[in-house]
Amino acid sequence: MMPAQPLSDFVSFDEMLPAPGPAPECLHPPRVFAPVVDARKCEGKAACAAVCPYDVFEVRHVDRRELPQLGVRGTLKWWVNGGRQAAVVRADQCHGCGLCVKACPEDAITLQRVDGAAA
Ligand code: SF4
Image 1: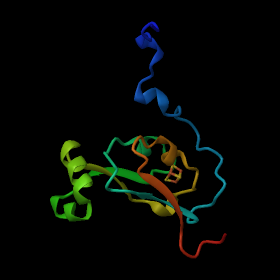
Image 2: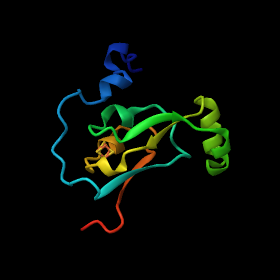
Image 3: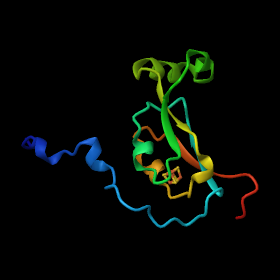
């Protein structure tokens, strides 16, 4: 039987986030990519808002009137997480660095090319 792993080997969620500092070198200028949050997956944990160097996200309370758009799974997550979800509020500031995609523990964020953006 293997010995139990000591608790000190585990890291907290905050330790997984990159240290605050200057924005990373981005491959793209603004308005080429924009993040899309899947409301059926988001649990409002705010990892995206914590890592984004350009303040693209806000974590907000989703009103009950928006529940029909979330489906059964999203509505259940809404209820369990007190109605908090990430919203893309400054998509035009996104530089496509991908930090939010990597940070989201629910795999709820994808980057999409903005319509009409040069390839
Ligand atoms: S890709 Fe980078 S700049 Fe764009 S929203 Fe995510 S973290 Fe912010």
